[in-house]
Length: 263
Image 1 (cartoon, rainbow, N blue to C red):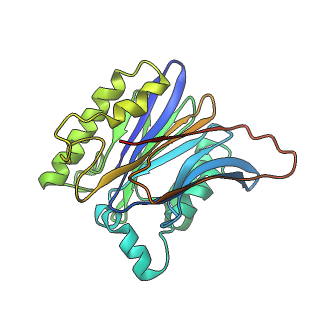
Image 2 (tube, one colour):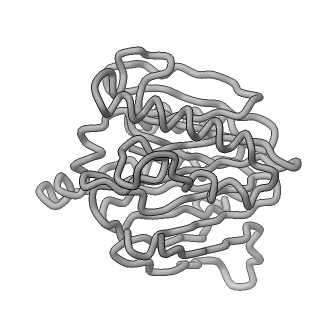
């Protein structure tokens, strides 16, 4: 139940996301080297979900099309004792040095990453749409792009009817309208938090329903190699901070900015 965005503004290529959960996640940022590649990723310590960018300027964000799993993720993990493999798949993809290899890893490694996935460099953005029932389909984008939780290339993927489908459609339309008005990188996340409907309406980009709420936002400036996390302190269990794991003397290339908001 998330929104992902790709946008160019003031010469910067941006990937951004509103992350919606049915539980309060515990979060950490990991800044390290994987297979010789500097990466930064946000990690949900409960489910191991991860997404982020690398020092080659390649970033990855994802939103679910298998929405039943997404809504019950914490319960599934606790009951089965094992988190989803998606975090591992995403970290593996981010350890590749170019967009071609990141895409190849994203669709093949341990069965591939399902849902809507944006993989981007400062110059090129590729979207992938796939589920356990649908083979990967790809699009190359030059314009600003938004995906939520219904199929774009597969009409029968994700939400297909009812209030949840309406929510997915209207959140996509709202995000497209809002990001179009962004004049700077710093405008994007506040615009994606803007409420256009009643406070508890599931049609809002920033969710605050009894069933689902927006816990955090992620923005990656791939051009300038900046990783920004904004989290809602009343909507997460705990933020464990930034875990940096580097060889002695290594100078990181990616800057990290963390902001907490109260609403």
